Length: 396
Length: 139
Image (cartoon, rainbow over all chains, first blue to last red; front, side):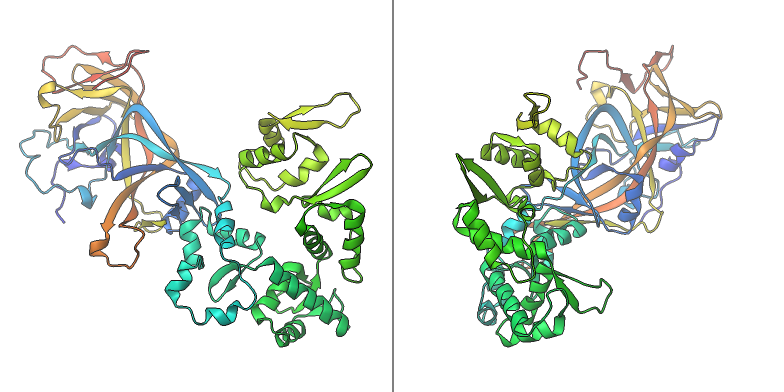
């Protein structure tokens, strides 16, 4: 590396220009468009993440790139300027140490020259955004884990697995525009499980089978659904032919640890999640009359659990036809996470919503910098025929 | 795909770059327009101990000041590695892009006033042209 020649100076000479002195500004011997030099504006609080190399850009060539820290996702936008932004590197920037003689013969030697390497047309700015997790669901839904697969899988080569639409963590990070933390909670929200280092959604029917078997065994063995011993449950399910991993996953999806501390092995089944599961199973075929749905539901849920209609918020819609009411599956988890698409589907579903019906379908929407009131203002129109009537929301 | 932003600066040790920013465009005489390298733009002067600066470009003098940026700017350098010198069995991408942090900018010397005409003897190499309201600067 060549030492900067005396007389040619860098950014520090500009930034530390002493009172009553001056310095000549010139184009750098390597002045040019330098499209490979990019300015990125970011919050001071993100600088440590950059220095410790915790920042990544994620996205496919056909997607707008996002910038991810460990926990957040930012859209990257180019903001142009009409000003002339003269960019001056420090003198010891090795990339721009010129090796030609072309700056000789200048007479500014005594006070020095600083060099402008490029005129920046603008800079990239960051805007915090919600993680783009819809794609995660799409990817994992292609090839859900099915019963009997563990035997089949053993014969497959690595390359065949990747062709079958299976994804490891490192593959997901390449594909999904979300930070690591957001990707992890996205996987959890989808009830995905890592099996043989591939992240999978387990086929609903398979989950239903394991859950029924678990409940069946709890009756046989007189287990309490509020205090299930993990080793015992997993052991019994294993002897029934379910892989350990899936037995544990079943506890994880339908239950929670009684004691959050590490080393605890006692689980409690979650009443709501179990009841919702059976409601979904019943409505798989389509809509049902409310009475017959309720009768079937109450009969299906395990002894000791109490189903209530409130549990089905965001899962079903009730419709009135004359004196009859019908229920039909409409799950919030099947809806897109972008607010514009979400509202468009909701209003296609029903042109008018009462707030109490709509709320379960939008409460999970997360738009950084926009409150839920803000969302409503942006995407809905609120009408209230009379002072004491329920306000009604319709499309904007 | 994922591009990790690399940084060899270490904790708090990023080389600081500088920005001199002025309104409108700096335009060189047509004779030298296509070989700007090494051409002098002007003289940056700090007349007093205040953070007030002047920039003299040809017949014109601009007055401005040193201002900290509200948010720092990182200087990133993009490099492409073609797969030929980097044999990874990844069929989907033909080239790998790397981003390196090579500097940080925290201050700029901003000239936002219109230039003041100077009476000068010497023929300037470049002249600064300020934009008049409503017109578009063209090079």
